[in-house]
Image (tube, rainbow, N blue to C red; front, top):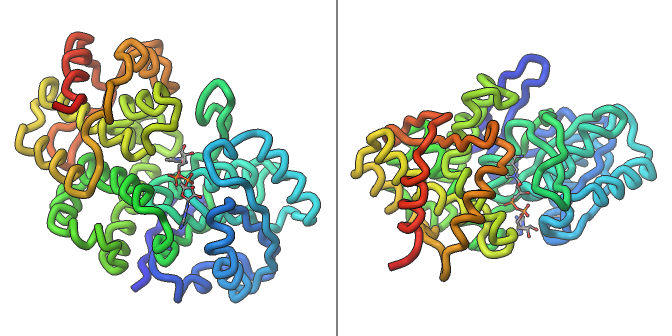
Length: 362
Ligand SMILES: NC(=O)c1ccc[n+]([C@@H]2O[C@H](COP(=O)([O-])OP(=O)(O)OC[C@H]3O[C@@H](n4cnc5c(N)ncnc54)[C@H](O)[C@@H]3O)[C@@H](O)[C@H]2O)c1
């Protein structure tokens, strides 16, 4: 029941393999005869390190390990330095492979190390969160945070393979899993009305983490992201559509100091907001807008702020400071209907303020 999705980027092309553990060694054939440094965090290494090592060993690799503390604070230049030290201590050379075993934090960090160590060595992604499987492990964005802001340092660096072992989702905390569903729903809204309708009909399969259904869904999301990245690898245009709900979502994360909402939760509030703007600016049908909100609520995602709304001025400022803003002018991705969006949309300030009020409960 494994599925393979190909991302065609010339000599940087790669496959994404999705399924339960059983067939994953075959998917790792590229590591045969090479040394792998398996990078993971302090939650994932104890839970999945042995199994991942067994997969790589069965594929013919030798394996070393490096563990960083779990949490966004490890996406830092200090951890990059530490991983360079460990790579040198383990004698990693230009044929070696860095394997990212973990969520988006580990993938971004290890990918950056792989992209810069010895001017770039091979990099294999083994995502273990739903968010990493459908989003961060695909597309080649890697990097770390600075005290001044998130993801300010980084390189575009594609993996040689992505191995999404769905077994790993069995230990993912519920809140993290549900947060990943926000990105899944986003793909339906921006690109694929059939995927969206399928999600509506399979809320119970999503809730039970049904592997057969998740294999289909993760593969479809990766195919959509792959399609977009193939057309616009470095975010010159189309790739912006992946940021539906993210302009407001990133601002919410920032003004709440990244400790109140998980990424997917902030993005859901952002998609609720984008739906209102879309209705008024592009005529997004009210029925579609309500379907999107209903699906997000049905899987357990928040549509509104918990408790008090952060200050509008702070959110407006955070949106303007987003590195995707050009010359301070806010550009939104807005929906025309479920399955189709437009990017680069400008919205009147009055409307921005007015709809922000709808994001508070009651
Ligand atoms: N590169 C990209 O295109 C891209 C896209 C979206 C997000 N991101 C980045 O991804 C990061 C967020 O990723 P995330 O949501 O996966 O968070 P994460 O990597 O921090 O993981 C969330 C938590 O779940 C734990 N965890 C992971 N897998 C587990 C498993 N199978 N079992 C038990 N616990 C597990 C982790 O230890 C952590 O505590 C952010 O840094 C964000 O900037 C990158």
